[in-house]
Image (cartoon, rainbow, N blue to C red):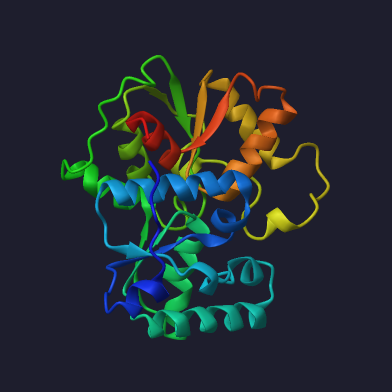
Length: 261
């Protein structure tokens, strides 16, 4: 499926107002692995005939890493820049593929005057599955066992555990939960700015501990819904020499693969 992703500046220049801003995020824009997730979600948006656009070169970081690492001034500079851009394009609804972007738009930006309807892509897909507008009838994963790793900033930070599971349950496959899941799920080890610093002293790194949780389920596929989680669990599979047996896919990728796109 070859599609042309609409850019906000070009769309509004034609006098059109997209319903949603698709916030691609730093990982979706720059990380080669997560670019595939951004493309996958864009394909889903195209299939559902959604009115959306991306900012393209006008998109900058949300400021989440800066704030979590303690650089409040940099965070506010980045946030106010984004809020000004959103005001320019009259943005009301924001779709994100990253829980960190979702969390900061939803919970932190309002303090600076940026109030929007913020939707994580799993919540968005859940609504279309519940309404019957998105049906996944493929048997591609019939013989697979899938386990889901809860992202901290979607789960514990915002209480969203059902949406990703609703989407996964719409895909024909066997599902299994890790021993630590939902509100008891273990962090991948990258949140709160940990992605960008060296590991602290200890007996075992968090991403290895979490990878072991996933391996205990005997799943063929570890499903994630966050770029940080994807990076850490992919590294964990490599550390355990399991990268050729067990695969880490984002939920958006699984939907696209199941649909045969």
